[in-house]
Amino acid sequence: MDTAHLMRRAEDLVNAASNRYRITVQVANRAQRRRYEEFDNYEDPKMKPVIRAIIEMSDELTQPEIIGE
Image (cartoon, rainbow, N blue to C red; front, side):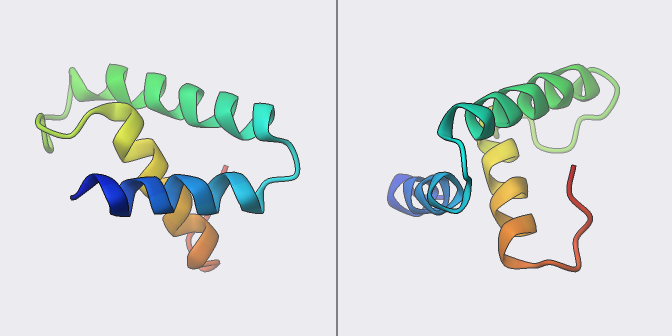
């Protein structure tokens, strides 16, 4: 995934949120959970947890059928 695409997804996520601080904390919390889950599950060790969290949360934003937190 290229940096420009990732930045666009992060920007869309922040713009859709009513509170920038809250969405930042939510991304950080999800990334922290994913980091602990990685010890048990070795899906893609090259992708950092915060990047994966941004991608997942932006997917939930664009695809409402995905259950979000």
